Length: 351
Image 1 (tube, one colour):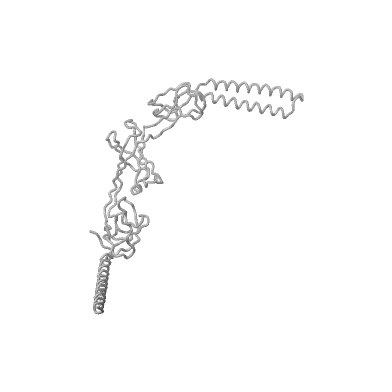
Image 2: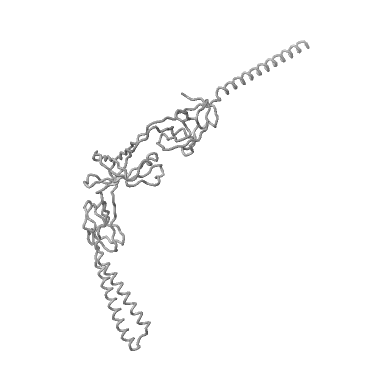
């Protein structure tokens, strides 16, 4: 019995030893495989591009909409009731032309009252002057009577001036675009009566990308292609916004002659810019920059490793950026995978 027990114990010990040896061998194999994988994957996979010299074209197009050269809302200078409107929407008018008239009844009453007040003040002054000679009034009372005459005269003159302003005149020449009130409407001073636009010249308003706006100057000649006519016409840059609209676009205005009246405000057109291009410009893709373009840092691949490099940049062409220093033509920069890189990281370039 004891012999069987001993044999059983020995067998179990042998099995345990064999199991331990197997586990140790598996652990060794796993460590070797892990080491191999680590060695194999130590290089970070990246995509790259070369710094290349190229010729940059100065031609580009931008879409925009025509605006009137001048747009003015003609308002009443006085309050009152509209007695007549002499223009309709679409009428062509001249600067100084009477477009509407206010009812003058109330204004005439004001003139009459002001004249009566002045006459009364003058009569009082004459009585005070006569009484002053005999000592009936004091010098202070006489001065007050004189002041009342001056005030009454000023009010009368003001009423006379206002009486001549019942005619509402246009300040500019142009076309009546909108009539805002009707006859019988009671308006306050400053109430718009009609909107007048001048389209003898039109402004084409476009928004130019930051990469291109630096090539433009006020006074540049620009070809404009209106969608309504299909005929190319000449324009001139009259305004370049000093600040962007928040989307890295800069408003630019181009003036064109429309004396023939073929075009209207609100029509669509294309501005055809033809600026001087640049030759042998060293560029890299915008995607190569670490962080933003303004940081001016890229990873350059040298000896299968990524080297963080500070460079100098010039014009931003949208998808590409000019390099003015820090890189040479033919050098390779990382364009994808930078998030996994630090200076000196080994890299594997994906084909």
